[in-house]
Structure formats: C-alpha cells, structure tokens
Image (cartoon, rainbow, N blue to C red; front, side, top):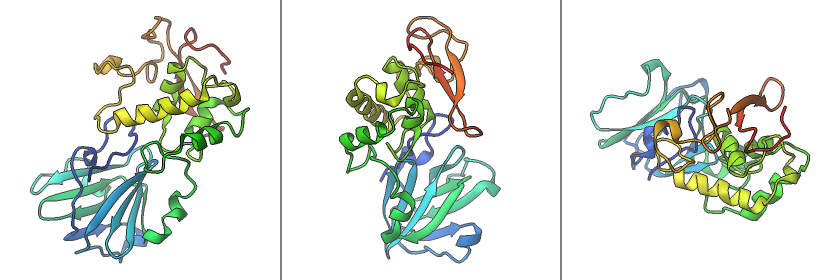
Length: 266
C-alpha cells in the first residue's frame, strides 16, 4: 500500500510515497522512552492510513503505530539490501522490515503504539480529510465558516476544519481564489469552490515528488506565490510579499500578490 503524507517542508514526500510499505513485519525496532518494550516482530501490516497529516500503520492483533511528521519527519521505504539514506543513524526512530523491503522513520516527533480501537484519541479531533474515504465537503465548508471573523488563512490551517492542508497550500489556495489570506473567512467568495479546489490540489499532488499548483513542473514555476517573496508574481509581475500569520509565537510565513489579491493585509 502506498503512503503519501500530505506535505513535507522540502516539497518532497518521503520514500513511502513512491514505494509500498512492508506487507508483513518479520522484524521491527522502535525507539523512545514509551516504546522501549514494544515488540511488533512477526505481525503483519494490515494497512497504512493517512489521516490528515497523521499516519496510522495498522498491525494484526489490533495495534496501530501512530506517527506525525510535523516539519522534519519522514518515512522512507527501501528495497532489501538498499542502504538507508534519509539521515544520520541517530535520527532513526523506527524500523519496520521484511525480507523484501524496510520502512525507516526519521526524526519522528510523534511516535506511539496504541490499540487500533483507540485511534480516535489521536485523530478524532480532525476535520474532514479530502483524501479520506469519508470526505464530506459540506462539513468542511461548515467548519471553515464557523468563525466568520477569523482570517481565511488561519481557518485553512486549522486541522479541525479541514485535515491535511498545510502552509504551502494555504498561500496557494488564497492566490488561486484571488483573495487575501487575511480576509475574514465569512467574506470568502464561493466557499464551495474553495473546498473543492483544496480537495483537488491535494488529490493531484498526492503521488508527486514535488507539489505543483501552476500546472508547470519546472522547479522555479511550480508554485504561484509560496516561497517567492520579492520575486515577480507569475501572473502579473508584481513583487510577491510575505508576512507571518497566526497566533503570536506560532506565526507561519504567508505569501500573496498585492495586485492579484486585494486586501486586507497586515
């Protein structure tokens, strides 16, 4: 089963996005104070399910290995005998292997073993997932607009509203809709189109090595505004601007074109 976390900071999903995870666990090693006695050896991996930005690796016997990549984590899958190349050895938190392939988890800030029946304790708060089997666009729309005064960019990043969107897609969606990320969510035009476009961007990029929102795969033209502060807007040529958005101390870099996206701005 292929696993594709929604986003990574480099734009390149870990190797698990392009290769299948081990189907049966003939060997396993997990590090961490709470996992010192965990033993998954011999258990089959039934499925690996992305839920928003969380990964749920379900094993026979009713156990789930839950991980979250946050900004720096990665799962990479290697063929038998292939040398792992995802980082220094001391950054490895988990190894799940079979005779055919090995999945290696690097720099995983969240890694825990729980009963599959208890998965809601870690992902039950998430909103609808555009890539999940129970995708509900009407519910996603309702949640996004529940606080109409909240800046749209902040509402899009809140995983309780719509699971899986990250900071890159936040800026790109606002640009594609020609609205400021600081526009109150309740004033967003065509909220149904917003939700549909968010789902489409995640879907078309789920198997790509690099995110593309412009339909141009060239390295310097894949994204409309994200990471382009001071450079010309790909649509009108106006220099792209950037500023932090979010709660003090937790601001995220946000990008917009002042010509293509009318205010408000910070």
